[in-house]
Length: 435
Image (cartoon, rainbow, N blue to C red; front, side, top):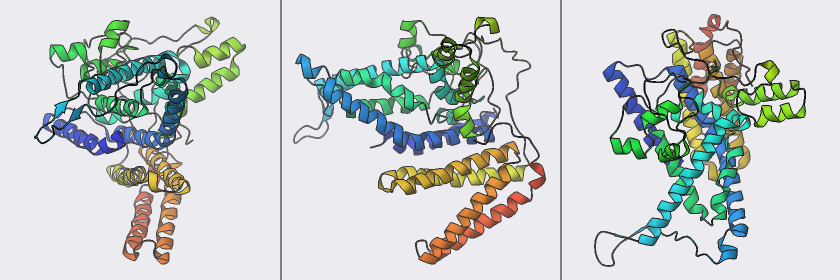
């Protein structure tokens, strides 16, 4: 069972509760374009995860089957059954001590591996290029939790290989890893203040994780924990929240485009490496710390103090009707994405790839709408005409009920008319490459 996929409805329920808090208190916690960009990045991450999760598990299983300690030391295998069982003939359940201890140990080991994965993703530029997606929002709410990289998994799987060497069964690893990520969802909020003393001492909490997302110099590169903040306390990377951070990255992304969010630091690394004068410089641009520069160019770029009185997060303004268009089109892409992910195991690879490509184009088009970018209307009209044509063809062939096919085609044409009403709005130069 894909724990993260099954958790998506719960995620949206909690986002709804956070929106209710915003409405009740009048405190601004969300911006529409920013949250759409967050969720768009999350969709691309889930699409990429179909392949990267398979890669991670394939490597993990291959290593465990050949090199686990149990194969050459005689150590016993990890107890991997359910830690709970029903009493024979009696209601209730009993605890299996060995299995419970085994699951607890694996969960802690996964969290330790996550700490080092996360920490090195802030200390090595190539890893930061993947992880930066998650930090590039200048807001902090539950949609930011879903703002994940589509490429980061290509690099970070290696940090979990030691668990395979320890002989941890892949089912226990995969379950613990998913639960670790699900836990981290709820800590991405400003609606929860400090918690009890014991919780703040042991667990990663919203207060601790707000620090991690701050660009304030004292907050940067702190609080890497997944579930247990004790790792940061143990390894010297803990910082308590003193005042609410300013969120984002030191060089703001200034785009809602989810593709550009995923590749902009990789692109910068390529540019820097191409102009480097020596192989040492090239290697340091790739594997050195983020912001590394040769000494004759000023050395590593360090974060500057944040002027809170003058700071304003980057934003764009579009007419309400156009924002409504973007939101409606995003909802359509969101529903399509969830359907693709839900039925991914049953779909042919070509159909899955085609569906993912269509959703990606839709998300990029929506980003362009919120940026008033000149390239957005052509992309949107081409996408909508393609969808309308596909609906008609499927309806004629009987693959789609005629009423549904006609309704979808009409909705696409109506969307084009709606978009063209605002054609004079699209006068902005590109803020980021379309990719």
